[in-house]
Length: 134
Image (cartoon, rainbow, N blue to C red; front, side):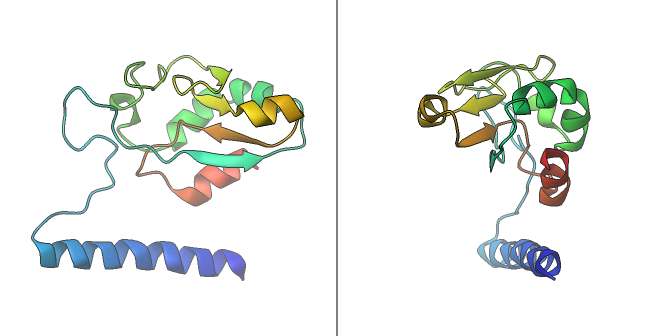
């Protein structure tokens, strides 16, 4: 039942967003880089907690599966510039905004907490991303 509610509100948010932007005379897009240029684009960073000490290893082993499901046009955003990492090379780091998986200082210090997956693009499907991280 919760999944159905989340799906409804996700859909409602997009529909309302499109209506509001139409009235304002602009276009709503979830494209990760709708305007080409020297900037970082739009991501959908996803934070999650895990008990597994092998979480980063497991993410690295399935990197290509994740990238292929994390949104169209993501290669235009994950270039290795502007606090992004290269889409083709798995990377992680502590308090590092230039890697694909960021571990916070507090998480590293405490040995527990959350990881930030910086790979998903702004046009990703949140249910697909969550399913891959589960």
